Amino acid sequence: MKYFNNEHKKAYHLAIEKSGINDVYHQSLFYTLTIDKDCREHINDLYDFNRNSIKLSGLDKSWHTSGSINTTLMGFNLFNGYVDEKNAKVSTPYELFSCEYSSFFMESIKLRYPEYYKSRKDKSFDNCL
Image (cartoon, rainbow, N blue to C red; front, side, top):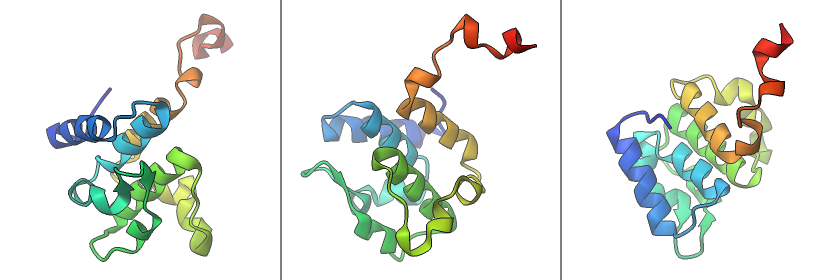
């Protein structure tokens, strides 16, 4: 797995440990949320570790930047399919992937859907050529 930086790696593992849940939903959520520095610093605004649930109220915090909003929306969507109903356009791949974290969002998707990223000879691109 690739990380944006060492802080991302540390924060991801700490969040998984703190939640006590290591399933694909939490892996993709925490991997995504901890990419962005602002999200890392405000992880408790975005996730309730006592209830093991995301905090939608975290979307309205004043500390957000365009990158942290994209990161939060991507993480929430991978966790439970959340789409911002007030402005669904911001939850589209076109909007979410238009930031410096796009290649890391692909890693998040791989964590969430590992069954689609297993190497299989019969499904490889090379066999299509």
